[in-house]
Image (cartoon, rainbow, N blue to C red; front, side):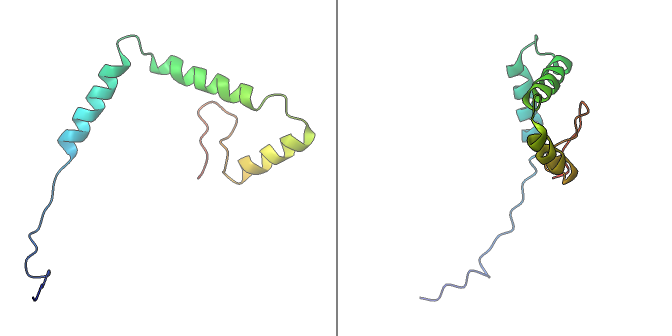
Length: 83
């Protein structure tokens, strides 16, 4: 039995743009009318600040090295890691 898969292939492509738009709309609908993205980002920044508060000197040096290497985001609100 000779199976030549190269000759029986049919090109297939699909545009997921519509499905992605539908998925995003469902996510926003699931968040509900009371969801406040600005408040959510503010709370995230506050949680991040709290997470790294109270570091001792050695922990602070390690933290600063990780920030400089781009592993951790900068301390400014909205700062993102490079990697």
